[in-house]
Structures are given as structure tokens and as C-alpha cells.
Image 1 (cartoon, helix red, strand yellow):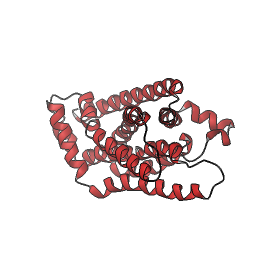
Image 2 (image 1 turned 45 degrees about the vertical axis):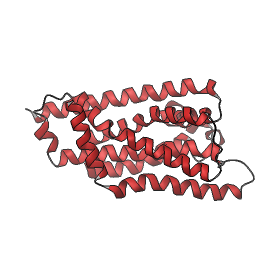
Image 3 (image 1 turned 90 degrees about the vertical axis):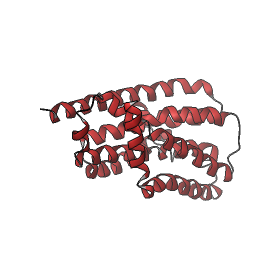
Length: 244
């Protein structure tokens, strides 16, 4: 009950800044439209909707990193967290309370991007339902990264880190190009990180290539658990430090 109340408070704080939310939803729509136009002038199918859409949706989740990191960072800067640390909530409860209200935003991003992609030519099929479920499983990875950043840094620092994070994760995810086009060390690094696997899982489901999904989702879930545990651990350190 206390976690739900805290999550409700965080939801209100997130929607209080609609411009940031609109940017997090509007930019992926703009990119879908832009690359759709580019595809018409290309001799190969790099940016066809069935290949581009999963990557753009995963890219949109990077804004969940920004939302969660900024919210937690602002709470630290305003001393809000120090005032409520006397509550019986544990560090895990706090992290969960920050994570829950961002899941509906992830679902909104998925639906808006899919609607746009269908308008631009993405054919509807039953695999889309499974892709939506997989994308919801993927989204906490980006939220947990933001919560770790927000725990470690101020809200202003999170903004700068986000700029680096979104570029690194997007290039290493293979959203804009096939990673084997570069190969070598770059591809090997990408394979060790979860972002490429997130895009690959969503694409494989949309293409009904289910045999390629399980391993990629396991990697994503594993990294999500690690990042969440790190966020809880560091948050707990902050709690203990503030009560001394």
C-alpha cells in the first residue's frame, strides 16, 4: 500500500512535465517518418517498417532512463527523500515506487510508435501482440539504468549522462544499421551488452522468428536484474548515509 502511494506521487511528478513526455514520444514518431522517406530512395531494405519499428521503440525507452533519473535526482536535490527516509519503506520499495509509474509510459510509447508505423506501412499480424509483451519486458532495463544514474548523480548531471547514454546504447543496439556491417571489436562489444539483444528480440518476434528470441530476452532480463540490484544497493547506501 505504501509503495502504491509513493508510486502515485511519482506518477504525478512525471506528468507534471508534459513537454519532456511529448519529446520522448514525439521524437520516435519523427524518426519513423524521416527514415520511412529515406527508405523510398534506398536500393536496399535497411529502413523498412518491419525492421525499423522495433529498434525505434527500443530507442524511445532511452527516454525512460531520462525520466527516472531526473525524477530521482530532483528528489535528492530538493531533500524530499531525506524527509521520507523515516518511513518504513525499504530501498527496494523506493526503487519499485519509482519504476512502476514509468511502465504505463513505456506502454504508451509502444502503442504510439506502432500506430505510426502501421500508418506508414507496417502490416498488422499476430506477432505484434507478442512483440508488445516482449517490449514491456525490455523497458525496465532502461528504467533501472535511469534509477541507478539518479541515485549516483544529481538531476543536472543525469541530463549530461543521458546524452552519452542514448548515443552509446543506440549505436550499440543496431537500431540504425546492421552491426555486422561494421563487425570486429565494435560488434563484439555490442554482443556483450543488452541493447543489441533488446532490438534483436523485438525484431525476431515481429518477423515470427521465435527461436532467436529466448537467448536475447534472457540477456536483457539478466542485465535488468543486475542494474536494479545495483540501484537498490546504492540507494540503500544513500539512505544509511542520510540517517547518520
